[in-house]
Image 1: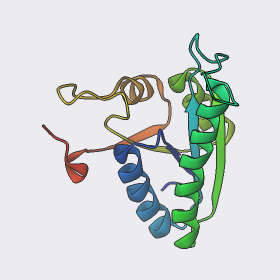
Image 2: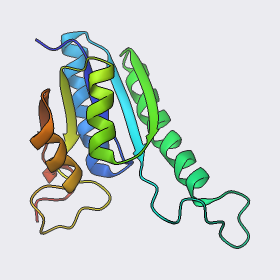
Image 3: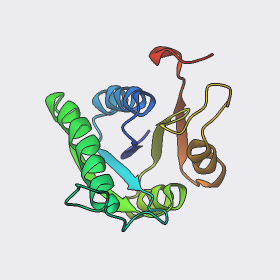
Length: 149
């Protein structure tokens, strides 16, 4: 059915819930999971904040690496083979490009992420991926994390 699952994350509860669903599928299907976090750098990417040693880009990348490592640990604890990546760019573009690079045949993601607003039906990244993906996309509902307002 599916041979390689891609899980994009932004560290939100919605992404973590979607990852758990992906891990359930991967365990059942005995297939690997790739976990990716995309760092979107705006005009503040090279700005250094007072008292900070690193610039905004470095800080965001470190956070992304932490999000990915946390999910990787959860997957490997369940015996699921994983690969990980942190990429820089526009999330929709980078997720779709990475899916193609790794030959993912299923993308599993939450309905919304950190930028989600309760009244929005679908997050902009999830919407963009579902509209432009040639790969199957499973969108995990947000009721399990207190959403569905």
